Length: 132
Ligand SMILES: [Zn+2]
Image 1 (spheres, helix red, strand yellow):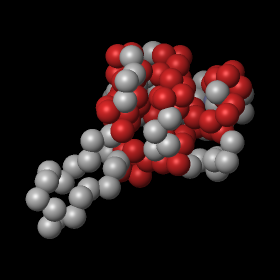
Image 2 (cartoon, rainbow, N blue to C red; image 1 turned 135 degrees about the horizontal axis):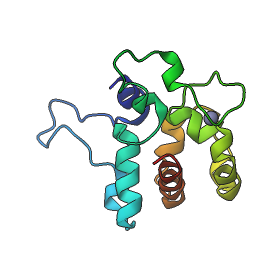
Image 3 (cartoon, rainbow, N blue to C red; image 1 turned 90 degrees about the horizontal axis):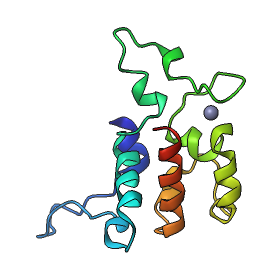
Image 4 (spheres, rainbow, N blue to C red; image 1 turned 90 degrees about the vertical axis):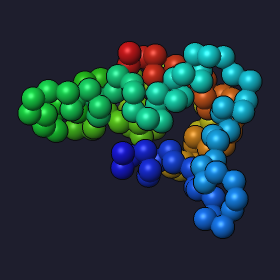
């Protein structure tokens, strides 16, 4: 829940606004395939196969259950930030979508996701598929 609020939550409208307080994410207003929309939603709410989530399923999960098994030095938590910016397992996607990483600071997930660029969402779909 903390990761969602830190990385993916949209700002709510002010209380004095008569409309509903939530804001619809831009990707839901775009013309995207169902698989892209599904995987972006799964990525945002952690319904994916990354170890940051699946590593918590055990009876006594510890940090080692959430460490990325694709990166050789073995000390990175396999979470959304790691998968987008630094995981060796998604390096080919960063090359394929290299234009998405121009003018973006490493680790700036909000800056990456909230550009409302359909290519960002296609990158996320491909990344989620890799870890299913
Ligand atoms: Zn990794």
